[in-house]
Length: 165
Image (tube, rainbow, N blue to C red; front, side):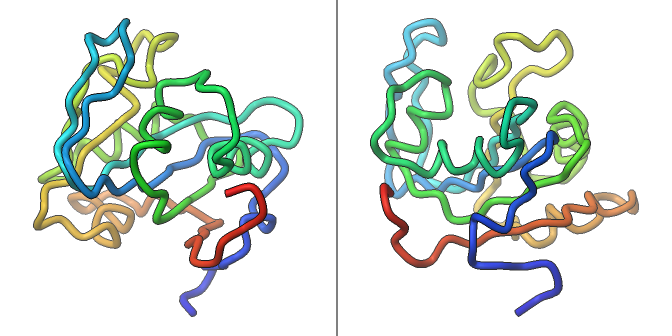
């Protein structure tokens, strides 16, 4: 198993920071988010950048996103319900806008739905990014265009069914 990679979501830090959810849509979907005009997302892989500043930090926020039995509060809740979370990365102390800016420097990474996940953000077009079919997630998280790697220090690949998922 690669360094820093775990299969246990409980190993994510319980401190504030930012995280990325990799979400795969098996088919095109229109999401019922009226404020965004019910965006239609194509089948494919998406990265959602979020922040976790409350009690329990990154661990608590990601646990909530992975639960199936929840009220749809954030835009990403609609996407998680429509797709499948295939990866989670956490970075204590980081900001989601920093992750988004860095990821947008990679060829094939785009904003698919302006305003998605960024209602309270004044700098980002969205906190949801789509990856072109020929873009490998490992390359995106490595070092875009010669920049330092994202330095994601906690990774989770959910492969087992966890209680409440």
